[in-house]
Image (tube, rainbow, N blue to C red; front, side, top):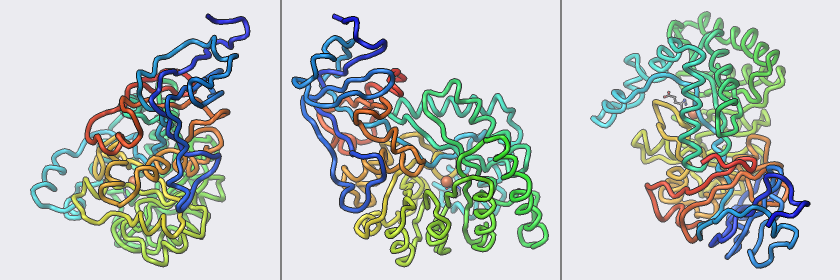
Length: 423
Ligand code: NIG
Ligand code: FE
């Protein structure tokens, strides 16, 4: 029975087989990534959108006994997943390219024949703001069904001033209806626009100038993104070009992230560290030098094994080496229509363990607290602790290991974001 002192909207999730969570307000690195707080026969109390207590149900403080009750049905509570690398505001799909790939063509061959990023740029340019925002919301609804409560979302399929802005506006517009918290990144430097001849230095320079002189300042003026990103890669942006773009991003108050060492070793993980980037992402081709640099930095190594899997590559990022050297590792979907068409952080954790040698505990830390740290929000989300936002996932399983072990199905039975049930 509710007492007068029970805060409005306060509730307790009771009858949980377990709670499993990393602990802390900042990123966890190296061997500490394996340390989870686990509580059996647990309960979680929530008030005003925040977690106020986590522990054994029989120890529930008396003042919380009157909170509304939610039956955890002997499931396991984990933190809402933080997907810190996605390309959500895109239009159109590339299933026929996917079909060509499963019949033997490579991602690079398809890109060289006019497909790839250029194909999504064409369809994204044709989409209205409302359509792009609706696409973001639709994908966010799928994400939340699979346990994600925060997602980063990048532009990068406009590749001109107007449509880069439209993609970022779509993220802003989607926030009103998205069950997932959205954090925006300007990735105008995803590629050269299809109409630019990248073999001509004058044409390259014009696009880089457009990014530096016009797009990034406008993003700042309108406060449309927190981060800026650049794809440093053979055939895309060279190291010097990458540096100039990151410098311009920083000058405009944006925090760098870098698509680094994805398709070849371009020493871009080291560049991310040099610029104090929040994350260096992909890293399939990271060198020993890059691993050592990341390990000594607070730049998060954001690994996206869905991309290797979807591109049918046996080359996965060296998660074990990174963790064993002491780097901060996070996991994300890379959700995009070309190289990783999934919203599910569950499959990403399964690939991280089954294909990259990560422990289940490391995968959970990487998919929650460390992702939150790379987005600069680990003080308020990413773990189940009193004081943090009530971003809670309950899975229909007696323990967190089932997240990995029971693969290919959706185990999520309930999701709360800021204390509001969203799935
Ligand atoms: O993160 N690295 C480049 N960008 C995407 C792929 C984009 C696409 O194929 O549309 C990625 O893998
Ligand atoms: Fe990406």
